[in-house]
Each structure stands twice: as C-alpha cells, then as structure tokens.
Image 1 (cartoon, rainbow, N blue to C red):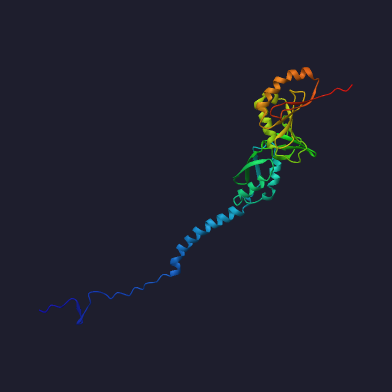
Image 2 (cartoon, rainbow, N blue to C red; image 1 turned 90 degrees about the horizontal axis):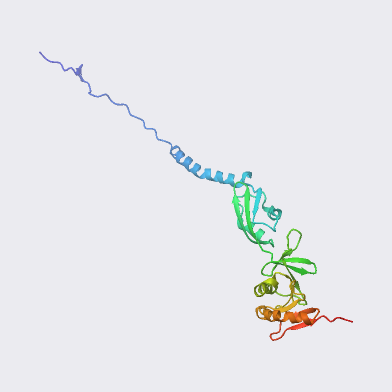
Length: 267
C-alpha cells in the first residue's frame, strides 16, 4: 500500500511559509523633526527678550517718588525740582551717576549717594557742607564753610545767629581761610575771650582785626602769633585801664612792642 504525502495535493508541493507582504516605511518630514527643538530655542530666547521689553517700558517702573535723607539746609523740594528731568524715566534704565552729577551742582551738597528702590522710588542721601561763618558783603551776608569757601547767600531759615561774622577790610580779595584759622587760634590761646568773639575783619592774608566782647577795644593781630602775644597783653591790661579812659584799638602785630591808640577826650 502506497502512502500519500499529506503535504501534496494534486501532485503539487505546498510551501511551508506564506509569502509575506512588503512593509512600507514612511519617512518623517525633517522640518517636523526640527520643530520641537526650534520651539524650545525660540522660547528660551524670546521669553527673556519679552520680559526685558516689559521691564524697560512698563509704566510700573517709571520714576515717581524721591526720598531725601540727611538734609537740613537743603529743602527736599529743591532736590525734587533738580530731578524733574528724570521724572517718569524708567527706573531700571536710570543712570545713577547722571543723577549724582546733577545734585552735586547744588552749593550746599558736599557728597551724595543715590539708590533705586523698585518699583518707582529713588532714595537720595546727602551730606551737606557745614556753615562756619557769615561773610558781610555789600549785597548782604554769604555763608562760609570751614575752609572759608562761599556756600550761598544767607536767607531766613538757615540760622546763623551763632555763626562768626567775617568781613573784608581794605583788601580787595583775601583767602578767608585765614580769618577762620585765626578764630581757632584765639580759641586755643584764650578760650574765655574766644567765646565773646563776634567778628573777624580780614585786613590782608595775614593781618586781622578782632572784635571781642571781653575787651572794650578791637585787637589787631597777625595770624600764628596769638599764643605768644596775648600773655603780654593780659599783663598790661590793668595798667591800660588805669591810665586811659578808653582805647580805639590795640595792635599786637609787632614782635617786640604793643601799640595802642587811646581815645582823646576833647575839652
């Protein structure tokens, strides 16, 4: 008996595997592949740019308020008026050195510091020049600092009742530091007399006339000599008071003598 091959049918050989159909591979668009990285890059760059544009243009950061510290002789309103050109400027873009240069022009301001306080405030801290004396001029009084430099014309509200009065004699122009220096020199040589000093008249760079409440006459002195000359005057005062009813002035500018001018009573 002949066995029949079960895999054969009608004399044909059946294959073990069926032919597989071809798989089509779809290529991705290269632009779509770049879309995500480009979007991330654009966001990374664009977000800060947009934020910067908003910060530097937003009215939220427009300068609107100025706070002043350290002022006594300079009114806060004067500082605010000086900064009017900056009012409304973006505080983030505001140049602090430019603000300081404007304020440094004020005659009373010695130093100034400026600080931004977001969102819209500027803090101004000033150190003022210190008044030391009043200069008597034909046009009125001028405030002097301790270096003898003119600050500004005196006006009500600046005080000055306790300031030394300085005047200029026949000299057209003198360095007023010497007038303040001789007042300090008197304070060291005769403190009790210095308390009554009301005026220093500058006659030249070295010579001065002092008006003191402690003496009934003015003193003509040379700067740098008071420590040596005043003891001799003190010793002579009782004799001068005994011999003369009054003196126009006493001159201590000469090294070895004291020159005095008595008041002559007319009959």
